[in-house]
Length: 214
Image 1 (cartoon, rainbow, N blue to C red):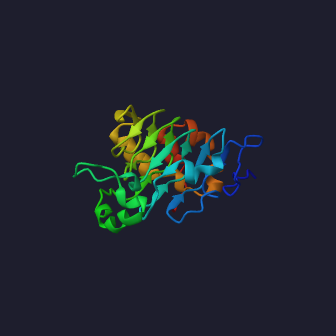
Image 2 (image 1 turned 135 degrees about the vertical axis):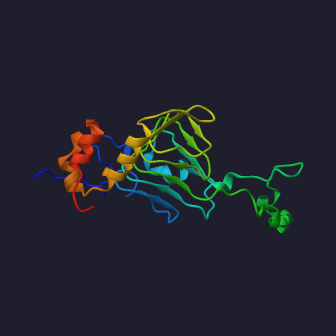
Image 3 (image 1 turned 180 degrees about the horizontal axis):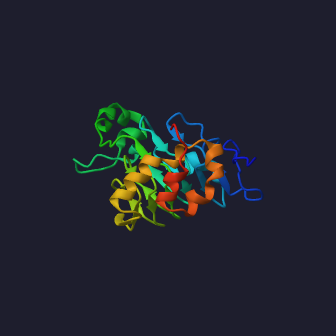
């Protein structure tokens, strides 16, 4: 019987320490990652929480779905990166300590777009950056070097700075069918039997392969 890949293994590719599965790596309660999503970095992929999730002073969350592929240098900027812009200076004086700390109220009410949410089966190219509070749909592709400043639709391809929608991978009808079949929620054993269909089959074939009762 075919055996599914183990989602609890930190380094899923033998001889390739640059690749890590993020779910067994992440420890922060503010970061949630689905099974099989991975990050690739030749330097230190295990430092993902500190090197790739930036200005995460809370309480917003970073949520990444299942089966996402993150290229080297993909970064998520969180809401802690925001500064005041309604006065002459944007400098955050209270964070520097001393008597300046008495003015901490000046740092309340900063712009906050909430959680950053990435759907399932999203591919991020090298060096992509995601700004705070962005929501990226299922099956999307974020091009290398893209700076994502607004939401990305399901199965959309975005690129550039700021990132713009290049095209969608499927038409509206097929996107709805793909979302309904939601292959990323299939039991691992069933998915194992239909990997070739998931990777290279048609939408019709994917619907035909879907398990019953889900």
